[in-house]
Image (cartoon, rainbow, N blue to C red):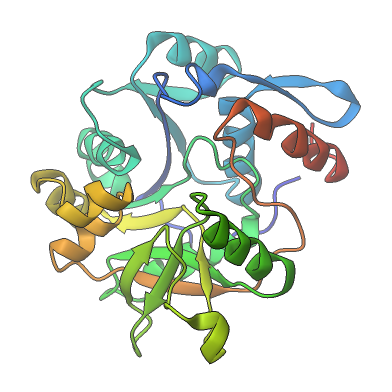
Length: 272
């Protein structure tokens, strides 16, 4: 059953799920089968589409992809898909292309990335409500305060030299100063500073997507491998929405070995 969506969800808003077939770490990932409650199997792209429908029952959902096999699968389960250029370098560029084709139906875009099937509806509601209610806000993205086991895990990843979660630091207005795969701020564990874990979903105004698409990737974006840094390089403010830590796993499917804990969470949440 879909959760109640924010009042006033506009017809000029579209949820876009960017889904790329040619993942380096997991080729064909959007079509990978995952089991939910009762052992029901669905491809990743369908699980993510269902997550979007649970959060926003009345908003259109579009899968933007680079591969006809994904288009065919989306149409098989009753969704709508759009073929976008293989040359799109990331999900934000793919959203920008799709939004331009949709026109005024995508004046506001919610980007639910194709591997973010466990994003809680409340987090999507929070980032959408912020951009919809404040005309001066052009990009929103959520972050949660990392405490307890989450912070311990980030610190352990840093100590062992593994690439871990993305963290963000913001200014007094709640706008992002920087995102990094390193733990931010430096020395947080010694100084007792709050650490915020970034969750990779976004809401944008179409004008911000146009500006993003017209710009070249920034040096920081290429170094960190974080697409959102191009907005900061262009002087486009990214509003960070401080969300309560969810009481569920929010892991993305990045590698084949991520499937087991995600399937366990789908079953625990009784999703099918």
